[in-house]
Amino acid sequence: MKREMRRAIDAGGFERPRFVDIPESDITSGCVMVAQVRTSEDPEEKAVRTVVADLKKSGWSQETGWFEDYGSLWSLKRGEWMLDVMTGSVTEALAADAPPDAPETQAFTGMIVTAIDHECARAAVASAKASPSPSPS
Image 1 (tube, rainbow, N blue to C red):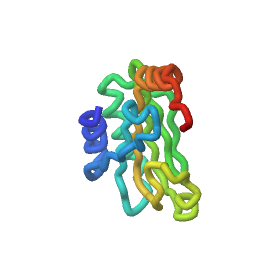
Image 2: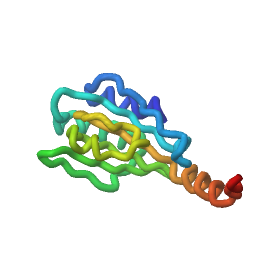
Image 3: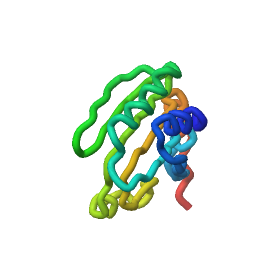
């Protein structure tokens, strides 16, 4: 999946992404991949549409998509996988309000591509529910 995400990001002319570590406290951490591409300004619509078009060529179907002055969001699906391509900015004020275990708590401008395997996530949640909680000492 990382290779596919990188290829689509490259197709849009963006720099190589940084993959964000998902906190282990998130029981679905093994089911999610997040790639970030920092840019000096909000990414241009044409470049983002190229990323989405590359994903569609790989068999992803578009569920939703929009582009506004403040950013964009494209959601795609393939099998049990959902992939979101988001652009825009997170201001310092918004970053300060992020939960402490959020994967990105700094101001950010650019593109974030998030992929989640829903089958994996359902299994992780079911496993966590089935596991007995440790007894308090």
